[in-house]
Length: 145
Image 1: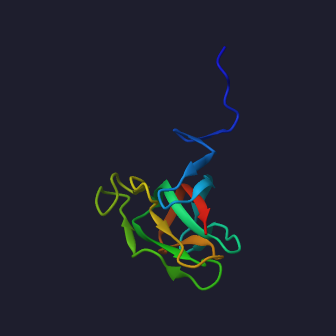
Image 2: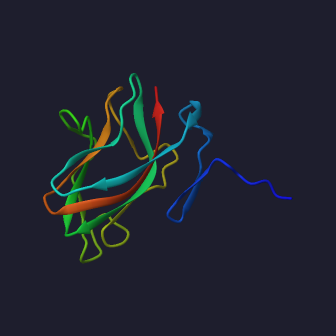
């Protein structure tokens, strides 16, 4: 008889284990976590809450822009004074182009070291959107020292 896994999480079509992993930067046993993304137009929104003394490393995710063409900037301290962690990323809804693999989609994957990380410990990770773009999706992340 097969053993049923009790710690699996279903997110869309991605099934991921909520378990410890060995970080390529040498930190063994970090807990992988997931965050739903639902941010509105002209918004600076916290996507991952801060933990005192810890940085936030984004390991992957998929974000989908809705409504109209617009831009996304990833920031730290979204709830306070946002500081950019990325450049301004265009998302084109009507046509395929920009950095997205498909219209309006931003894939954050393919890097074993993570996609980005807050520069400062103890601040949140978030996003700032242009006036005409809604953003939905998910992020996979962990907290690091």
